[in-house]
Amino acid sequence: MKYIQNHQDKNSSKYRNLILGIIFDAIGMLSFSIPMIGEFSDVVWAPLAGFLMTKMYKGTTGRVGGWLVFLEELLPFTDILPTFTLTWLYTYVFKKQ
Image (cartoon, rainbow, N blue to C red):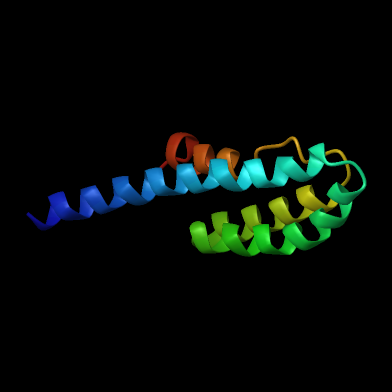
């Protein structure tokens, strides 16, 4: 019974991370669509996005993902990259358990 509950908890956090990741990627891309204001908002969003990534994904994946999303948001013309979604794919699809 405990195995079933643990499995359900993992699945719910898995899809919660996907939904949150898509929302956070959309927020990051919104700034790309607003001329002049967009680059300023990236300065505010970059550290917040890095922090959120480290809270969503524990361990090395979270730390590396946090730095990547931080740099991606700060660098110009890279807002189009869906870093949160790519991290989700790495964690739940491509990474060997």
